[in-house]
Length: 389
Image 1 (tube, helix red, strand yellow):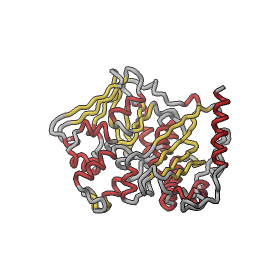
Image 2 (cartoon, helix red, strand yellow):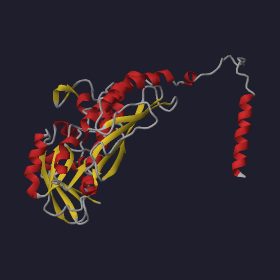
Image 3 (cartoon, one colour):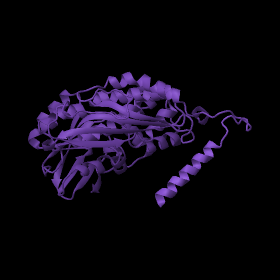
Image 4 (cartoon, one colour):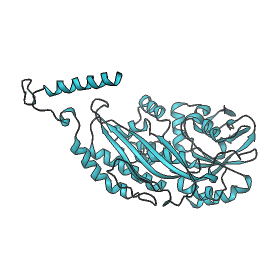
């Protein structure tokens, strides 16, 4: 009965449509088009043609990275896997996009988008295989969109994954003029017996930290608040580095650690990884620890970057707040046995990563403590911040 009613209701709507005279211009408007509503099909088609070569440049075994179909295909056997588990991740760039929009800095946010997904996959031991993006705006600016997708393709090449598809949505009335939003979706694979679960992490294991390229993609709501309250001139030389504009320092793309880490993962040298995103060191490291393991981080074990020192000074931010808001100069942590420290450090250094020995795993409540002496991160006295999962 419900189905019948639904069918009848739909049929009545169709009758109403049929009774409309398509030549009626009594209200001063001719036949309507999608363009009248603010959507340009031609612009969307032109964008697909423009970005197709960018996608093809990300081809890899298992994917041809051609665009235009209803779905993207990936061949796991061609990629060399025998008994794989698929691992999926999705993310965005957050309010860093607002800085990109306000200051016409669109050429790195696509790398951020890929990094936020691909770095999450590598934490599971998974090799990123393919990526899809979602780009939404009120009115499609093909020039801006092409710059964004070009940077997504750049990020895919850095991560070794293929850009096999995406969606460009033009939605009048949903966004302010010039605004857009991004979402990314990445799928990777790892052989069943090589998944990084963190279950072997134990007291005495060492925590290595890989240097970040800057703020990455988290904490920008606070950055933007500081910029507004302090009246920063974004185009002026950065107070901490006169060779670069402040906006360029803030917009530095998130570092992608995938290719540097894959060899050590394949060799079985790494017990656990933590991507340092929202929640900082305090909240991300415990996510990969087993029960009974506590991470203790020495904040004095690596130099505070001039950018992080600037943000902390401008906001008079307490060390504890820094540790749960920003990456504080460490974009990825690597947990290894003491006997593997030298080999993993050397391998990562050869892959152009900056490696610091920043802490140790202790027996205790699952969680993390970040601590530093007086003078570290601007503190007037010894300090400690803890988070238990």
